[in-house]
Figure 1 (cartoon, rainbow, N blue to C red):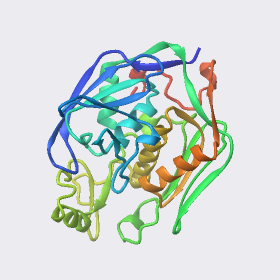
Figure 2: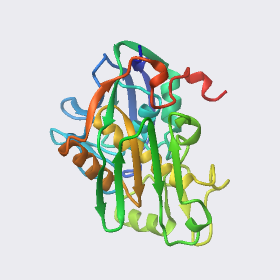
Figure 3: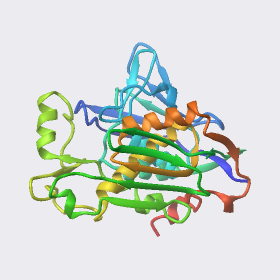
Figure 4: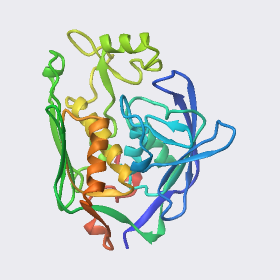
Length: 304
């Protein structure tokens, strides 16, 4: 049986929120089968649960934000991407602030947390979102599209009119039935122009952003010591973001996603259209060999 997964033990972490610059504490807890992923705000007068599902999505301007009962939790996509990429179906995430810490700007430290907690299989069959027809949304020349595919593939193309971006690959396609999320995607960091960062900070945004948690792009080159982690890190991070956004459908996906210049807002529009057009069905897969994403090896082997 291809079983649902949760973490074995609770695990804690802390970091800085990229928007506020304030310290945020996290606790990841195991959860029962069919719980899904639930964020739990613990810093108010009462504990508020915010399911990681499409109908709880609020603002998508700079990151993906969930909201419920007047409370928000933002910058969820990197943690959701780590959970999706490691095949964790059920997890409760306590947070004492309005945003998930940015960590190093990628999913790698969240993957490390999940590995440290351990992953256990549960007594329930794993469910998947199986795409049954093509769906597309556009905004200007930006495109987000999903279509049926016997596996899980993500293709993304950037198009930035800036000399530094043009030095590096702006397209990538990854088939996760053959490729490890941990090796190929999880370490890709968020990025932005240094000039844009200054403008954001002047408007009390991105107060926690720095070269320890983002790739800073200057006029002529990368500002970070050591440069990029890999040559296509920019586009790989957009793939990482898309995987996190897609997980808001509630399960790992069987299908092919294509994005051209898309971001969180358009990704969210695509998810809404998938829902409204009933372009999927929920299926169970009994055989491990038929799984559409390569997360099934013991986690400890991923770095071997």
